[in-house]
Length: 629
Image (tube, rainbow, N blue to C red; front, side, top):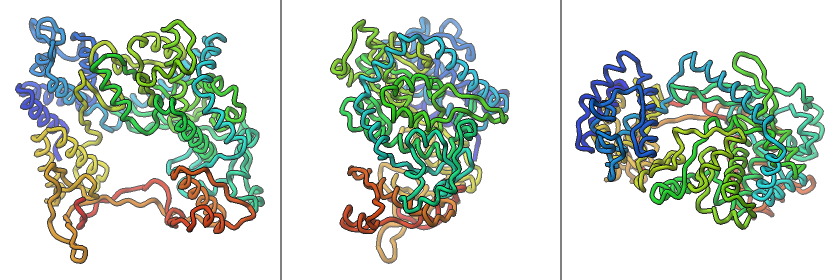
């Protein structure tokens, strides 16, 4: 397939047709600069202009971006000038009274299109990412020393007011042994993967002393108590650190994550489930804190772009800037929950160069408790800022007034515009870092959880996430290219879709059918629906011939007590998902009898997860006849 430059050129011409302008000079500029600067112009320089443009729209005036020349006699960049002059006044640089929304979307699309493509960073940028990780750790320690007793008292008072009932329930779950841990498919620092995690033989003394006993969580029931003889209980100084590693994010910087030891992640998942279940039961917190649904954030951002009553804030390095000191202060009144969280937290990290550092942050990305704890800390700081702005003490009843103007989803925050300055001050006073290029409250541009709005209009864009594929064996790139084509189709970029159709049809050797979005076939989506190519000989249902992806979890057979434990945990998870109370297996009543009493009939539990489990190591692309829907 052709280069990213060719794709950008077609997209620019497509956007120019929509906005009734020309992009010929822009296309030539991009071609020349890519020749001299490489793809970093598309992935780093252009996104820099896009972020600047968003701030210009928010502030209502063109600012300074030294990477792109200005118009002679005007303040607008020459690059994409045909689009900019439909949004800003050419002479003064001020935002027009009625800027062209299509041009705003086009500028964002053309500048940010490759901003998050997953390409390998240079070694220098990877080294800088680790250096930034250590600098962030140093800053967390610095903020810890600068916080006064008054600051911590105010923080604790607000968090107790917000989460008192929630933490009461989780504390009881820990005390009465109602936690239900589980293993995920991801990697761990001790190298266990798949079903091998269910055969873990390492536990920490900190977990044991915190009331999270190995006998309660590593055994199906106490009939298997002799297996505890094979469990190695690790002292605090001998615990395995988290393993810091770099994964692709953007060409500008990689993402820094940390792989937890198996036993730590196992307990973190249990605490996470109990915490999220308790928050979901709280009618107030469930409205202002989100964990799996971004739509409320999107709706609130859209409304804020119309009435400007709410601001959107984005935090930089959010997870790495949450201090463990704040988490401990937040959980101080709940000894069981607090002790379990502290015991499930890794204290040290091993860096890619093999060195080890002690952590002042609560946890990096990779911990199951990282996302919920950072959300709770940021929510507390948001309401502290509101309280300081109002210059009065608030009670929980007062906080309910803000249920339609405050929303927290990880590091994406929505707060009332009237109190945004004090909220920002509160966040930064406690160590958070508000990203100025992605926080908006002055004008009518808002962004939250991947959606952007200007004056109520959706100006969100399509992003290219992977390089264009050159062969069918590049399964990830092939799937990404098909997804990109379909997203561009629904966004109205018809010329670009036709160009991608030609490239993909050549790659697929002509087998690129029209299908529904729910089909397993890698095909073209259309507003006119699917196009059948033949009927199934027995079922008489429509079929199309196309390529589809196939991947299998790695073979990893699990037997014995580990298999029984996993099945019982799976049964308990199914009960939880059905909204029933957690079920605990009895040591005296046969499992079959318990299951029958609970479900009236034995559940249909597939045995495949005992044979294959974990993330697939590879994905293959195959050709065949499949349903188009």
